[in-house]
Image (cartoon, rainbow, N blue to C red):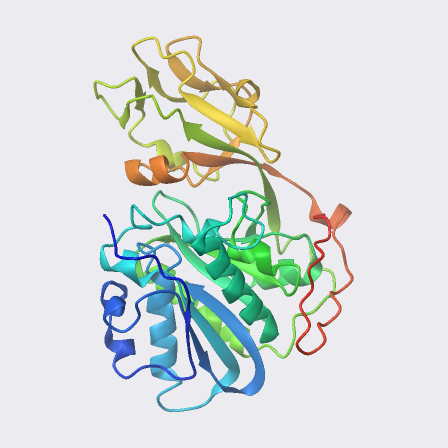
Length: 368
């Protein structure tokens, strides 16, 4: 699916355009032709940043925001200022993650391992504008294509970040890959969290994210007091798993090089023992999967065994984001692999110094 010329700049509005809240995600392109910041003033002027539709087929964030604004903005002042980033309305028109001639928008933020492009420059501009607004926190709302529980993800192991995440779910994932995500680029400057709200279109996901946004808008601050160990079950991503681009794959009993089991996504957030089968390998494909760790090294042999005509786990693992959507697998990955960590042993408890008005920080401290 192709679009027209790539957007070279974003739009910033200080109001909600008339009729916008009546439009589903697939119709937003009629008002918005690219990434758009919508600023809405509230009683507390320091804003909450909420990002929706970075992936055009992940509509829960927009559904939650428009319900929120219908209940507040039209009749009452918000308790806190709100900045809404509508990411990719053109892809949302076609219900796609991104269009064929677009990159993944949530891989284009500062820190991306990409060469310079109109998109990385565009998202650098949006990033710098967000920093000028000095947000209390940044929330990026997403959906999954496979069966996953609702969970939050953070890029720093700190009390305030974990506390914010725990308001959404006790299941929290710490990740440093993939690079170029909004939450990672903002995490140096304010608590940032990615919400994974189940599959698009599920009313529970909209209800859950709406309740979380309501809670955040009423926060006076995000406490730095240590988070109780029972409040957060923390995992970290240790590898990303891809299907080899030359391998023909499918699900169930199909004539393909790699036939995944039909219920593969039921393994999400399950601690799988060694020897668990992901599916069958046909036609002599020696290594149909590739696993890379956070440094990009090939660690496939550490996690998978292909010697008995099947894809089997070589050790105990916990996958997340397993999906049966072929397009998502080809555009992104098959899944992530996770391990449990005990954050209470190593979390930071100091805060980030507030940014002086109009000053942007360029140094990037190491992750914990």
